[in-house]
Length: 400
Image (cartoon, rainbow, N blue to C red; front, side, top):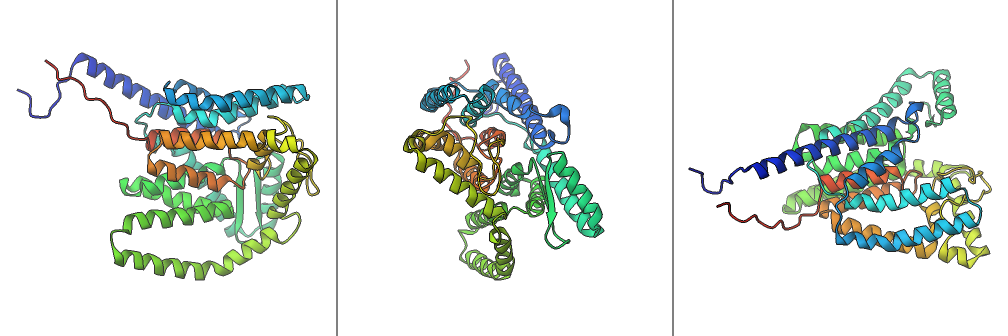
């Protein structure tokens, strides 16, 4: 005799459970491999160029075809027209198709069917990346060997892995390709803080990784996320809110000198981090000043970013302000369509926490190179699985 509320297990439901379990395992492995490729593709030459096609393949295979996907059609149409215009202007086909696929892929990834993935396994490559740069930063700080640090930096630069540098010989900033996913690790783990020791450890490792990466935007977003999360948890208690306010004031006072020093180093010279970004803004303004049609419709997907006073950008597919680069390609019209579609997709496919994490992640990369790219495809797929929008599932008719 069945207990009250207990559902009878039929061959059909058992088969559905097995199919769901197999799909969850496949999606977990797919996301694990995608993250591993992004974080390790520069160190292992055989993996080079595989991250984007693999991530797109996982997104396409996991698609849930539904009417909401019709909202992607305007962006697909505009992107296709932009691609044709670029080809007519002599832009290489490989560049145009790459930017089209990645741009559409960042939207398509939201519309995959959620799967009950193992987040603990899927996040392992991100934890490895964070632990790696923390270990490098601490090792160089402890060794205090300028020659060894210079040799390591030369190797990293020559191998196109990123950069490692220090202003004072103590705090080494380890900026490697793959770091762009560390803010995602931090945000997901922070929101899952209460779900076990794994996420608490992952949050701590990710926070140390953000510091080791030496990216001011990452740290600012992390602080904003911590404040948002603690306020959500403590909003039912007046004493907790007062305590949070005191901690915020104390933190701002302590961090004042550090922030002032960081800003002075970023803005202090033309070839500084922010100096290069302002140079890129000047280049974009110059392009739009020469042609109002380029401002409205863009210069075409895959078109090169013009050279500036500080650096030559035309040979690179990534620049410091990658979001500005895409804006130059799409124009204000295409960018408006893209952002509207992105906002709709996030709202349609993620719950409230997932939306908060996604926009914080976007904010972390808005002034950095590797945004609106493979990293974002992986982020969208991971968030859809971990923070899906809850829809009302029709109840099954009672089994006779």
